[in-house]
Every structure is written in C-alpha cells, then in structure tokens.
Length: 419
Image 1: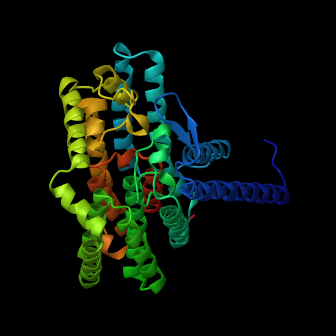
Image 2 (image 1 turned 180 degrees about the vertical axis):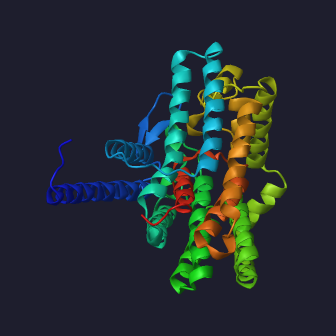
C-alpha cells in the first residue's frame, strides 16, 4: 500500500479540518437565519393549494436540515441522536404515515399527497433538534438563547407597532385571516399563536434570570409579559401562568409569586383583559366555537378510531361534512386544524397514532427532567413543553411552524456536547 509522507498527510488533514469547520459555520448561520425567520412569521407565504402555505420558516428549516445532512454524509461525520426520543419519534411518524396511506381509500391522491407534505414538514422541524445537538457547542448554549431573545424582542416590537398602527384586521378576512381587532398579533396575524410564542420567550428570559440574576433578562421577561397581555388571548394567559408556576416551583417561589401578582393585577386593571377572562368563564361565542371544534374532532376520531382520517386531511373531512360556511367553503387558514393538538392527532392518526405521540412526549419529559434544578436549558425546555401542552389544547400550537422551530431547537440544546 502506498503511504503518503507524514507532512503531506498532516497538511491534507488540516485542510480537510478547516473545510469541515467552514461548512459547519455555514450550517450554524443557516440555523441562526432559521430562528430569525420567526420575525416575518406568516407574512411571507407561498400558497399550497387549499391546504395552507409554505412560510419562510419552512424553507429555512428544510435548507438547514438538508445542508447538515449532505455535509454529514459527504464528510462521513457521525450524527449524534438522543436515541430514546428519536426512536419514539420514528414510531409516531410510521403510525402517522400508515394513517395517511390508508386515507387513499377516502381521498384523492392529490389530497393525500398534500397531507404527506405536512407530515414531512413536521419531520424536518423535529430534525432541527438533531442539527442543534450536532453543530452547537456546550459553551455556546447561552449565546444561542440570547439570539432567540433578540429575535423575540424584534418580533414583540413588531407586534406593538402593529397594535398602534394597524389594530383592526377585519380587512384581512378576504385573505383567509380571522377578523381580530385591537389585539397584538405581530407577524403571525393571530393573537393566540402570538401569545404562545411570547410565552416561550418569557420562559427563556425568566429561566435565565433565576439562574444568572442578570437584570436584562428580568426586563425582557416584563416586556414579553406585558405584550402577551395585549394579545388578549386566554390560552396564552393560561400558558404564561402555568410557565410561571413551573419555574417558581423549581427555582424561586417568591419571585414567581410577585410576577403572578403583577400579571393578575394587570388583567384586573385592563378592562378588555378582564372582559375576555369573564367571557371565557361564561362561554362566550369564541369559547362555544372552540368547544364545537373539540366535539367535531372527537366525533371524527370516534368514527375512525383505529387509524384516523390521515395526517392533515382534516380540512377535506370537514369540507365533505359541510362544516364550513357558504362564504368560506374551505375554512380559511384555520380550516385544516383543530383547536387542540391532541385531538388533531387523535382524529388524523387514530388511537395508534395518538398512543405513539403520547409515548413520544413522555420520552421527552423523562429525558430532560433529570437535573432540572441545576440546568437552565433543562428548566426552559421542561417548562416550554408543559406550557405548550396547556396552550395546544385551545389552538393547534404543537404543529404551528414558528412555535415548532423554537421548541425543537430548545430541545436539541439539551443534548449538545463539547465538540
């Protein structure tokens, strides 16, 4: 066998190492731009039939994951996985895919294909956690969390400007958006999803504050809290309350009591917030519509209990059932979902898909719970999944692009190593 001189071999290895390092820097940049894509949110959309649209976040996620995969295969670089979570994820994906294939008995190939695209999208978003695990160094975690807070601050300021300059969204109903008025919606054009995202930013900043005692993190927490109040979203109010209690239970009960007190006093003093909470308790029109959505999803699940109707075919089921109004026959942007992520999974993938999805969530809980008192990233992720499970019972936030990108990235940060 021909042996290369040591000097040549070391130079070649050095060049290869530099090239790999440069490529990894590019992937890190792609990852950063993907997180930054929450800023334009839903404002940049490429229509995809009646099933929805592709956002800039979707494109960024796909490009980042593909770049990482191609580089890893080309360089024969080992890809690290959090195996317990990844295996349960695969089982859920297989269950969802089986349900979608079986949907060919009911829907056209085009309709099922579109449903498959959205299952593929969910896979790519989860894989962002794998990218984070493999390209970020353990000493960089706080810097990446700071980047999230920077993007979250810009997102929040856009919302405040929108509330001041364009508070009435009823003009946008012709484009499929809901007619919200005098509510902070930012670039997601929806106060409920915006509130869920603000609750995630609040969780990141407050968790960092209780560990680092840096006043800047506390000020950001107050900014996110105040802005969340202006969404007038009851599901966001509940999510923020739950997040505050969880963080307080593990780290600082007195501080959290003070924040909850400020939050509750603010709700009491702001008339619209007070009215929204009372209206929710007395089942106003919005609350009744949400209950109707739950009942509709449960009815579909009960009729398709084993395998569901197929992932993301929910819009077509509702069209066939005549669930939408005459002036909005396709249900608008929200017509493909259910006001509950768990019921969405149940109705579209059946008992098998729901069971594997719950096992997938449990695997995440079990993996990140150990050592939570001594790790701000574990506290952030644990609190995030709890608040999202609460929030997602009122809107389909577990499958919403700009919320998914933040959560799955945070999950990946839990498992980074010294590279």
